[in-house]
Image (cartoon, rainbow, N blue to C red; front, side):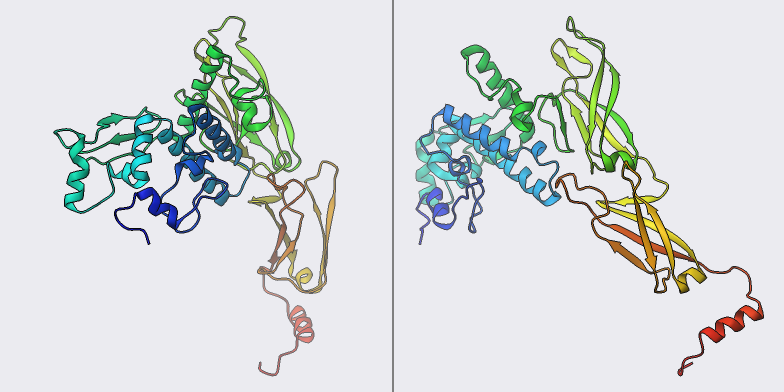
Length: 396
């Protein structure tokens, strides 16, 4: 059993361990920053940079846009934890405090709680004021703030992890220009590193990783249900302010609409908008808007379709053809023999919208029925036929 006099890092190590993805296993409430980044305790700055880049790219929100909401939230937490780990370990002062007292001590503003005599002894070497030898040091605006000693609140990561990563990439690019380093494999830089291509477009509603201090130009992109079902590429002409010589003020962007895209999907073109200064331009964001369809209503990956039938059809059966959304006309034929009512539904598996995050999969087609009852009074002859066809039950 760990005692109170043991360092906080040892107490945490005894109760928890890090998994391969940098998160904590077991019941520990603190993170081992070294294990989160997958480095040794004596890792040099270059090794820390490479490890942070690898983990940040793996969990970057823009790479999770097509995944389920629970997976996106988990990735956002891990992405933030990678930023916090690198923020601490890349700063000599914070790293020194963390190595000595662990995360608990770092965030408490000094050594973990001990009895009064031990606490006084621990702080007696920090100077006449009793403060921590590292003093008070604000971190860069992209990370956390740190206060040590004197009852301060300690370290707390309060930055935006996406801005932190953007700042990291800008610094890496500066090192590349100054020292010939290659922070990202391939010529596409951050875009290619995240998405495996250099087209300039990426998808999703997560926080953006570039030019976060510039406004973005949002453009509504109206799409029919057929567009979202089949997929297509839209060519859209944009006009922009350019301050860089040779940069055209008009450009045609090819915007890919992938099968299964939903309303609200954001398609971002980095740096294609107005330039605030030479070489620094706003992003253009196309936001998908779904046009109302005359036959289908979309709900997630499912399609809803309504069939109106007469009372006679509802009782006696009917045949109904559904014209699907495929580019080549395709008919889905319903043959109903049993009676239907206003609460009857039929689910046809795999005939809904494509699932963009899982190519080859589709949602379902959900068919409901609306029975048109006669509005006027039936004739006696009609009533007689109905009574003959549906005699009273024994309980009636």
